Image (tube, rainbow, N blue to C red):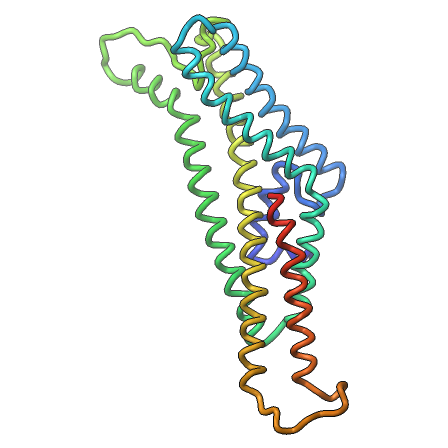
Length: 262
């Protein structure tokens, strides 16, 4: 069983696995999931761009297609940036696991658990919020279409899609197929920032936990009795505590550049 199957970090693992960016995935699984992500996000971007270029003379088409196209471009940048820094993420996650293995009991472990629990809460809230937006955005055309069909409204209605494409293809004819494609594509588009941003939260929280542990150790060292001087360093408990604080401090600063790449 992997360390990241624990209750604190399992959701982060699953979110990154969806887009093929979990560092510990097999190459086959990673390439497959990344290929699916790129296919749906790329095909949606192509259709939006096609509609935009074909309707350049219509201001309303430009307004409605340019916005999602810009969002997709930003998502691609975020995904590409994470892809090229994936090895750094693995290094960071290795550090996280090593810290937990080194600090398994006591108040210092409670500090780790407290920050990990906060990570879990933030991840769940952020995930629920963005996936709720995904469902609301993707199903709006269906809800409006069903409303016109079910309610006795004396008006003709032409199905409106997520973006303007009716000037290049028959949206009414392929409405269900386009909706299915749009629903899945937007899911992957939303999954990218969720996975990457929650990984950023995990990193920040872990670094904060390290500094909190250092603070805890230093406070307890200051409160110790230094009257007795231990000439033998091997038996000097306070000396080893200080050395461990220095190591944790160095480890925390090594993780900061990795966090900045996200």
